[in-house]
Every structure is written in structure tokens, then in C-alpha cells.
Image 1: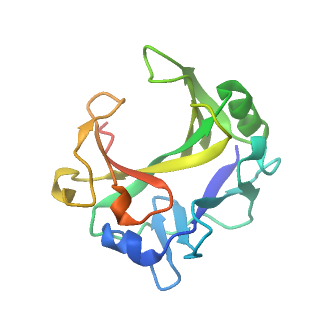
Image 2 (image 1 turned 60 degrees about the horizontal axis):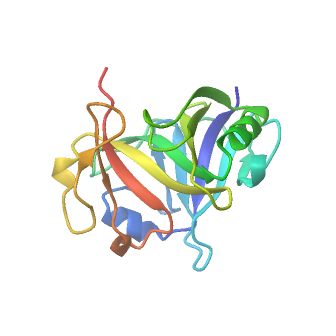
Length: 196
């Protein structure tokens, strides 16, 4: 199976630092075995690339998924907000099955498919090593929409840049969305840790 190594996001590191992440001087930081690299390119917002080792084909269904030879990231940094891992990356599509199959052909592992009433929309979950891509049939062009990060204590992070916590789709977990005022170019949500 192919394994994700890096996510390139065209945001300023200062915006993520304001949310309690700890980007280094190069704009990069680790979450689990993955690296988020903030490129700070004004006017080029959004998730620019997902770099994956062992990828069989690039740009599956038009998504910016590209190959890399980078090794796995070292141990994650300590983040003031208690973030410890990427829970999942959300992709929107007009056809769940087509996008999920393209990701699988590129080297991903389709773990599950479902839809209403169990899930809010037709969805598939595709794993690339530690990264789970949640493919949601939501109409419009195929695109990466947002990222969900697991944190230790969601209530401790309450503030003007974070919306109210609510029940997540996964039972026993809670989630809160970062507000637009944070100045990020992608949707970002923080979610409580998955308990064993």
C-alpha cells in the first residue's frame, strides 16, 4: 500500500501558530508520521499537494496526489494545542465510487463505503499509510476540502477562532471547526482523540 508522507498547504505558518500548532522556521511540522508543510504562497490557497511514497499513478481523478521518495517523518513535535495526528483528509466529489476507485488504483486501500442514514452522504474511506482520505459525494468538482486533526482536549482550545464543539459522526467523539477569521485556505476541524 502507498503511504502519505507530506501535505503541502498554501498558508502562512503564523496563522497555524495562532491555532496552537508549532511550525518550524521552514513552515513544516509533524503530526504523527506525516509532515504538514506550509508554503505561505499568497493567492495559491488550499491544499496544493499530498505527497505519497509508493504511488502507482499521479493525480487520481484530478486530485493533487503526487509521488515522493521522502522517508517517514520523525516523532511528532509537541504542539501547544495538544494536536497529535491527522485524523482524516476530506475530499469532495460528484461520484464517490469513481474517486475511491481512482485512489485505490493509485495505491490506496479502500477500507469502507457507506451512506445515509448511517453517514451524512455517500462516502468512502481510503487509507494511504497513516492518512485516511474521506471521499464524500457532495457535488461540484473533485477537490480536497478540509483536514481534521485529533487533539487531546478540545474544551481547552475554546476561543474566538474555534466554533462550538458538537458530536462527531463517530460515536463518543466531538468535533469543532476553525472559523474563517483564522485566515486558513482550507477547512480545518479539531476532534477529540479516538479512544481504544
